[in-house]
Length: 137
Image 1 (cartoon, one colour):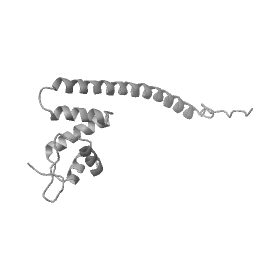
Image 2 (cartoon, rainbow, N blue to C red):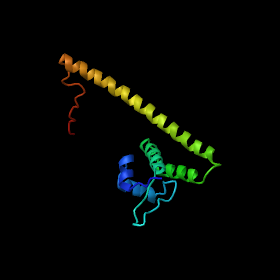
Image 3 (cartoon, rainbow, N blue to C red):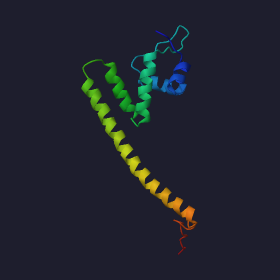
C-alpha cells in the first residue's frame, strides 16, 4: 500500500491542507490517520476515494453533521446499510430540490436577458427598469 503525504492528498483531492486537518479533527475519516515515525500523516488511496466522496457531499450542500453521521455509519461496519441509504436518499432529495429552485431562477434570469438583449439591439434599453428617486417628505 502506497503511503501518501498530506500535500499529495491535497493535490489529488483539491482540498487544502487545512481542510484535510479539519476533516480529521471533525472525525470525517473512516479510520484514524496514521503517522510516520517522523510524525507526519500517512494517507492511502482509500482515503483519497473517501475524501472525494465527502467533498462531493459537502459541495452539494450536505452539512458537516450529515457527513459525520454517514462516516460513523460506514465506520461501524455492516448492518446499517438501510440507515446509510436513508441518509443519502434524504440528501439526494435536498439536492434535487435545490436544482429545481436553480432551474426556476435560471428561467427567470434567461427571460430578463432576452428582454434586455432585445432592448439593447433595438436601442430602447434606456429606462428599462430604471429606479426612480423617492421624494423626501
